[in-house]
Image 1 (cartoon, rainbow, N blue to C red):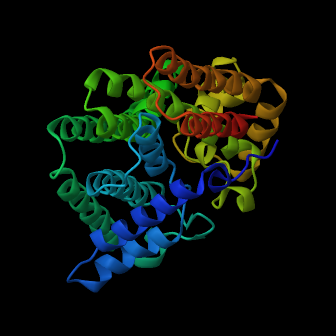
Image 2: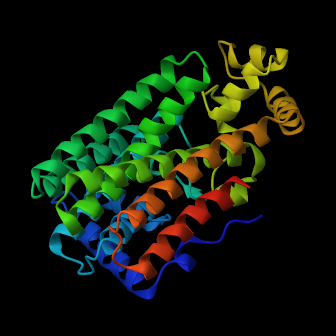
Length: 328
């Protein structure tokens, strides 16, 4: 089943708020050096789902806070700038030629300029973060530490399922977690409730990453906006690769333990084997466990009478359904 576009699930007022976030991002990446703005804005203009700022806004509205304040804009823009910085750095690490169906910043502007632009975006994000409550500053620090730890874990992993899920939680779950808890905190100033929403965000982020790992095998370049089978070529500890190795496949052991990148013939043999031996179904099952965990948090918030806006609750549930649809 094809997943719907995220924008189609959001109410007009949320879409309007995201437009304000986009404007805030554009203002935040201003620089006296035109090339820094050009690289940053190039990535920004490539688009994306804006799932993280959408989560921040929705979690804030869920608990009754409907005003799009300067504080909320700073949080949303700051998290998105951190995400953008990681994309620039990831494309350098992966030597990725494309991003979202277009030439990557790494390919267009070169490694050095792209690396510096990524650092620039991190600094801009921290500048926005410095204006926020101490709790959110501390949680932002934790998220950024998770991002860097996840990158290192990905490089030294032994292809265990536990490692793969830990990497999902750190590289993707961290910013989802930060987005959800920050929106909740703005609304209630209660860290206990915000921490509940952090579990929601973390679970949702892991589900999204597992679906990305699956789509890397099952989708085309047109659907992905970048080359498929990247995780295989780069022998990454994606959940699909880890499950495949755990299955006892000799081909998996051969490819994932090679000291050089596998040939295209080996990659296609791997894809064929993965698709017929139940690995994709097993990965989907794991992803759906995290979808259920995210749903359970929203149910518990409602049972504890924390939810103040039923229409927003429906939108949040639709985001959870969106995550589920990407898995299936």
